[in-house]
Image (tube, rainbow, N blue to C red; front, top):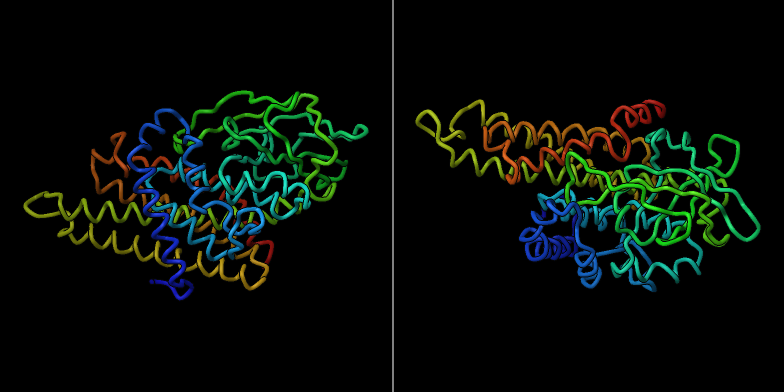
Length: 377
């Protein structure tokens, strides 16, 4: 164990995830990159292994674990070199379904949570819109009450698991005040709800991403998730879980890039010796490794603070900004030492380079995160 926060049980979980990735992901994921999505059977296998919904109630198939255990899972998952697979899973476990866990009624959880934890029901969350990304309160999707139904109208954009999801947690304006929004449960196949288009990205190729369209989409009144007009605060609360998971993903990508690069520079011969024998190369790698290890410990400290019940908005905003920028610095530096081969499709370092870029954007852009930090001084 290499952290004061880890226990033997955490190490067993890490090893279990590593075995799953080696057996079920790495041999097949290049084909998923070409197809543009991760097969839902993979999530079913993860559910069968008890790897989904670690923090959820045991009555619904969860393990009732804490935020540190959930971080171990996210970091272990991020040892894969296929970011599209990782984000497919983390959206399901750490970004979408937490809305049901935190705000769902007993009846809503009983109906939907067993499918979530088993991987039979794939979840997505719809917050981002064409004109509202980090500015959540600027969304224009609306929901109006009509008798015993809510009627949704609007468009969501950049929705991971949007094409192949089964259950969607959708944010919509329900009042005139800037922060008056609510969360809703929308099932695939609901009349008035369509996938507008599948989106093609620069990275995360093995995750499906969609535009969602709501055109007089009628859902039962009991599909309101949590309190009316309090959805903004639910979104902000869940962002902390999401951003810790994205930090774990960033640290995982940086760690893998360094591992690949150390192997490469020890083997690659140039000008009569290995690249590792060049002082500039090995010192650059050492500095990138130092930054990555420091960021990893900060990530664990933030998760530990969550387990202690502390307000972590400022620290997690720092963490998201730090790791989103750092992973790009590390992966690009490592790619440089691979030379021309580092720019070839199919090479893990090239894939990590493409996948790393969005980690400074998604889940809260660096500039927005730094402003959240500054507002709390």
